[in-house]
Every structure is written in structure tokens, then in C-alpha cells.
Length: 182
View (tube, rainbow, N blue to C red):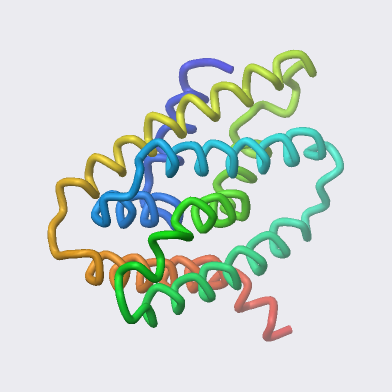
């Protein structure tokens, strides 16, 4: 992987998305940053290991299936955050929510199938996997720092993160809308 691929990966994982929204909300709620980053690393690590090992076998329809599953999870999690009566409702599940959201995050799929060169040697796939973990640790830390700077309270963080997750879910299924008209 060259510097351009690393820059593309950095920009992909630094962009706002469901995992980053949960990281920022976790920081606002003063959750343990190490736990949140470990959950993010595990989620992306699991997803990347899966997609990197199967990427030569991925049929085009898989992209749509991943989008639908991810969108469904984001809607469920978004409504759960919006419906939280008190801030503690999501504090205990913060790491688990980030792990599941990250494992289903289409960013890992995009990284493995579109950014990592298809002609890369098998031995270099391990380096690509490690690069993913380092880049996501850096970008995740950035979102935790941003969330730590925000104020508005724990309930506001849940409401904003919940609404953002539902918007991300709608954006995920938007490209699939023409397919349903057929």
C-alpha cells in the first residue's frame, strides 16, 4: 500500500459515520476511552479479517446485503438511543454497541474491497489489516477528543447520536431505492 491508499483510508475512517458518532457520544458521557477504542478496534479487526479473506469471492450483490444489514442495525440502535429515558441506559452497552456497529460498518468493506489493491500479495494483506487498526485508532481518538470537548449533557449526546445513526441508515439505503422500483 502506498501513501495515497493510506490517505484514502484515513479520510474514509475520519469521516462522520455511525462508529464515530458513538465514540463522540461516549466521550460526552465520559465513558472509558480505552474500552471504546478497544471495541472499535475489535469491530474493525473482525470485519476486515472477514472481508480481506473473502474479497476475491465477493459477488456484487454482497454490497447491497451489507448495506441493508448495517442500515437495520443503525435504525435499531438509533431508536434505542432516542428512546433512552436516562443517560445510564446506554452507558453499560457503550462498548458492545460500538463493537457491533463497527463490525457492521460498511467502511471496513470499502477499505478491504476498494482501497486495498486487489493485486496485493497475500503476505501484504496482514500489513493492510494492521494499517486499518492503526488508522482507526488515530481517527477514533480524534472523535473521542471531539466528543470530550462537546457539552450538552449525556441525554443530548444520546439524542444527537441516535438521530445521526438513523440519518446514516437512510443514506445507506438511498442507493438501493431505484432497485426496489424494478
